[in-house]
Image (cartoon, rainbow, N blue to C red; front, side, top):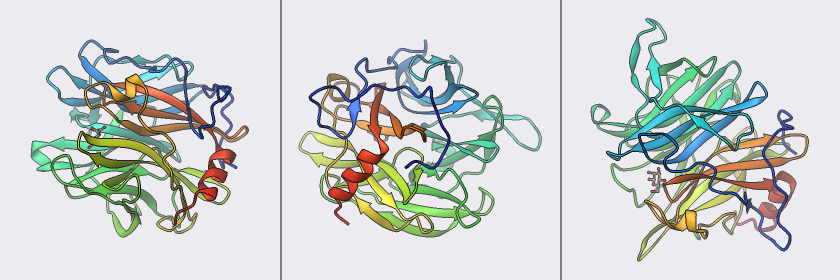
Length: 327
Ligand code: BMA
């Protein structure tokens, strides 16, 4: 059971007849084309949330000089997206001055109390390598820059949707300055979104994800803990393969993994997942959830080129994780 809001207009398709998979794809994937805005080489690894009866999001687009930036977008149905052509600007919360554009990649968006937080991999020369950028907005129009959460090198900063024991909680994945042939998920806590500490190890690479693991969408609160969808990576003679995995974490001590699903839940196998700028990548960055029906829509980047959509049902997924538990 999902603990959260109803979302009657969640995008949805029933599992196709004859399909036994725990996660199934939207039949008109990809939902966002690589040239969705004029400057784009690609649009992928992006995050969406429900807002005021419609949907908004922060989108990663790499330009034709292969630089990554973040863009705002909106949609009436969470399938057809209108993405702004200009890079998202960030402001200083005290002076109101613009402090630059949101440069970097792999955004996540999380509503906590009255603020939408964006976390992303901010990779600039001035930071001396990738680390976790943080910004917030009250209205999804003006975004205020907060200090980077961690030291470099770090990627995949993903917030929990509420404070736990009085603290903000964020997953992250310490990494290197390149394509990182290792990586575990850790969790850190903060009283104020600025000072981060009380770190814990959460998830290690193993089985099909033997190279590295990283947090995906904002974890989903369910009656028995936190449902975590993550990306897990294996390496072959042809490069890395990014699959999706799932686990359930303890509600009060979310660094404790109660169940971890032994098989992957989605694997790159369609043309749009296997052919693109980086073949064989399914990289989940967001979900929409309906607490009433238990429907979950998963947004993922496919082949580092386009945005795709997949579906699952919370009770079935939880049962599947438990049945295939490998903790
Ligand atoms: C990771 C990140 C992701 C990307 C993935 C596969 O290191 O850069 O943005 O989807 O590699 O290329």
